[in-house]
Image (cartoon, rainbow, N blue to C red; front, side, top):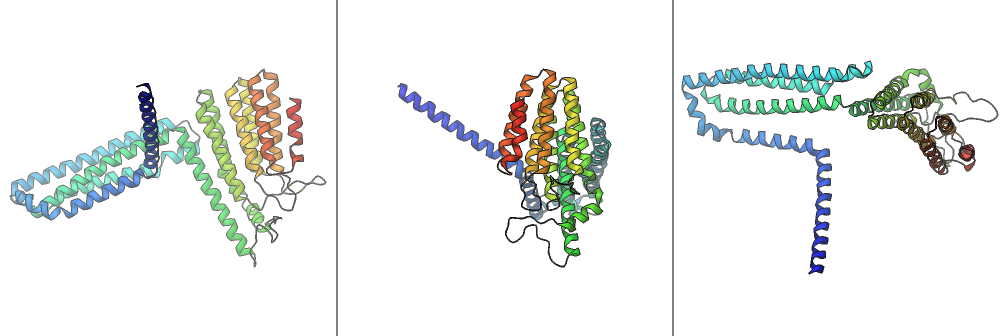
Length: 411
């Protein structure tokens, strides 16, 4: 008997785990393809109602052959359409007003973008047009069009309700600070990729021969002077990315004060993603350092901006005694260090200039923790420095991490 109970418990646990895995997979599939499935089902139902129209006309078409019944149907459809027009205007006024109230404290650029969201305004326009269509069904000339008008009105009402629900969910997304940061970073990444494509096209037009990023021996990266000249001539190409860095830092500070560190972590993740996209867009135009003399173009304004913003935020966090914010900043600098390790420079030299710069910022940040009596934060910083050093061994020479290892020993 005990053996049977043990087998039963084991079978029950196995079945429960399998069902849980299936549930997780179904949830993931629903998140990815739920909207597509709902659209297909809705279109299939509409087509079915269209094909069923002759049958419905035979069954109920004669009911509206009398003038009084047709007049009553026209009055019903006209009143319903007018009510839906008013409901659409009122509902979307409330939704937009509530959304603007919740996002009014965000930076001006994001407020202007989110308060005029195309999807939200498009759902309002769609519901308004569908309400007009429902109202227009009251203009049927005779009873032969009655069934078609009723079916059209029913589907119009259903679509309006779905648009209302979509607008409500979209407004909730726009109010969510993490969604706001995601929208901002996606737009900035698209803008950087657009500049990358423009630089490639400009380099193709300005050169008779293509400018390969790698020479025949696949060992030495060529400096793409044409792309670099294009970026220098369009120095404003990183403007939106720079604004996004400021916005993300603003979010991180504000929500750290409120104790919502999940938003803070998300803001720093967006900074890392934007920097990664920037490095990909500027591939082939980075300039490494030279120990003998200063190389023009070595300093990168956008990378310096990102690191400086994190340094200033670190000072603010330590001044306020916010250990969790400081820990998030150290992880963000470590993430940028990993991003900058993937930058390739012209020539055979494997030195990672910008990664070394980020390592210097991390060392200074960890060292600044000492006077504030935060041993846990200090240990976390040292651990992150060690992880960064191990990561650097896969991308550069071991001599590049000597200063970091010495700083770890000192701390």
